[in-house]
Image (cartoon, rainbow, N blue to C red; front, side, top):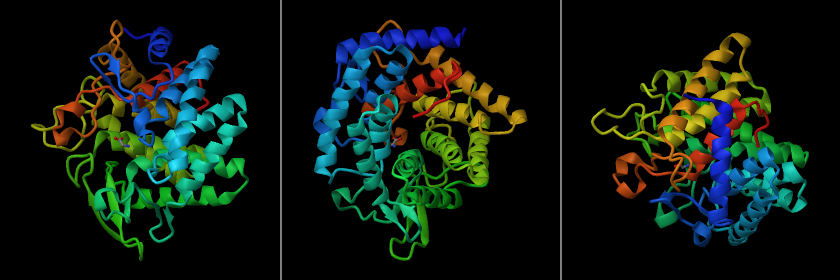
Length: 371
Ligand code: GLY
């Protein structure tokens, strides 16, 4: 049974309880119903999602409690901006979903400033050879100056926003150039997706690709595939470019046609069956939200295919991947990197899974504005 209004109300009721319990902490995952708090690791890439969830709840309920808590987390994130060295390509996840959303909903100029700083950090990672936006940093002396990753497609909206907000096309042009490189090098003919591609950082020449959080260089990590699906749908929305819509469709068709019976993907679409035994609920949630956006970008006769696939995914998450009575996060059974066999990171809740589950539910209930 799945009723989208009832489902959204149930999520909002759970968030009411959860927010009273964890307040303006900086959660990432739950263990036995207890949320962690990453205030001490403030540059971690997922730290914008809890304020993001609070803003989605605020939009729905206008409850001032959510506004206060979201502002509280956003203030904590300032430390990461000030320290700078820990920042990476995921500043869009961190400040678009928190600060830019705050600005859009409340007009908070301080939040717009934070969004603009984050967009400037992201733009500064652009390598015109390639061209691509550099992923990560050289942590542990790793030589990764030429690496770009599929996840970064989801960070481009902060560049599109900054371009519009500052009336400065540099940001837009960087986002489009990166998306074109990803389209040409990461997305295979069948719509499957590579996680990490390496370019020569001096000449820009394509060198090779790595499996990353997927099983192998030849496989298709399901969350990465979901990031790509949603990321290209977003670039299509912001630019109107048909090549981005077509790329999103190609990925979506691959994603949908490789879903198992319960509509929630295994952690990799192309790993050998004997190792590919874990589902990733977060990939399902991200893809569902992206499919709902895509259903509004395509021709009339294509809409239903993407809309109904999204609805089936959300219904399955709601019925099979939740813990309504307990204190776990909204959706359970996500995976960080399944093949590393780190049991601590398998079958766990992930804060971004919750964000996109709620966002998808809001879209199913008629909301069209995405932050
Ligand atoms: N962006 C990292 C991940 O999806 O796990």
